[in-house]
Image: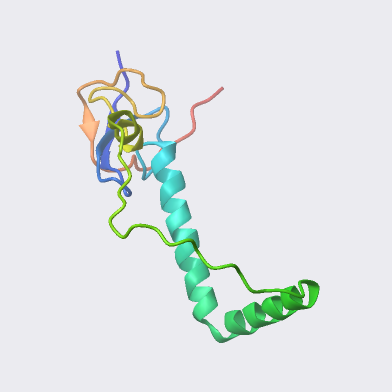
Amino acid sequence: MAPTARFFLCAYCRAQALICRRCDRGQRYCTRTCAHRARKIRQREAARRYQASRMGRFRHAARARRYRLLRKNVTHQGSIGCSRHALLALDASVRMRCAPQRPVWGRCCVCRGPCSGLVRRAFLKNRRSEPS
């Protein structure tokens, strides 16, 4: 018989996901892609908060000073003018690769193994390790 599964909504893309009892480690994301994207967002937000702090501003100024000492010329060449209404064509195959992959209902989103119809919405309580 297939193992029971936990149903949850991915914390990043809000997709419905199932995870079997064997693979369940308290995941919040349906795929590793969602987990990596969410981590990048959290890191970017933490960096923004740090740069806004007093210590972050001072350290950024010191780093800029050191950079200017090493590089005598810190000016940049201006951009080449371009059309204001220039649009890039988006190929359909590129659009499909960027879309998040939706998990298949009835299969574990980690191991892709089949899950039984017994689905829970919460974590298992008082889970004991099985004897080896």
